[in-house]
Length: 101
Image (cartoon, rainbow, N blue to C red; front, top):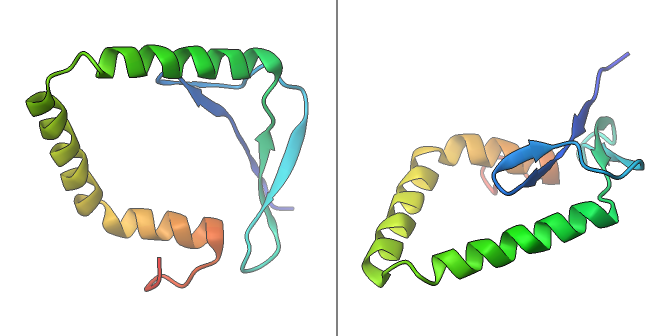
C-alpha cells in the first residue's frame, strides 16, 4: 500500500489544515496513481485567504518601486537557482517530460 500525503493550505505565510472536512484525490497524470489528498477549503478558509490577499496588496502598494524591483529580481534569482527542483515538481504534478517542464 502506498502512503499518500494530505495537501494543506498555505494562508498568510503559514501551512494550515483548514476548516473544510472534504478531501479530493490527487493523481499522478503519468501513472494514474493517487499521490495525495487535497483538503478542500471551507468558507472560513476562503474568508481568511481573501483577507490575507487584501492585506498583502495594501502593504505591497506602499513599498517603493525600487524596493519592489529588488524583491522581484531576487525572486527571479531564486527561480533560476532552483529550476531543476521546480521542473521535477511540474513533472510530477502535470505529467510533463522533464525537458518540457
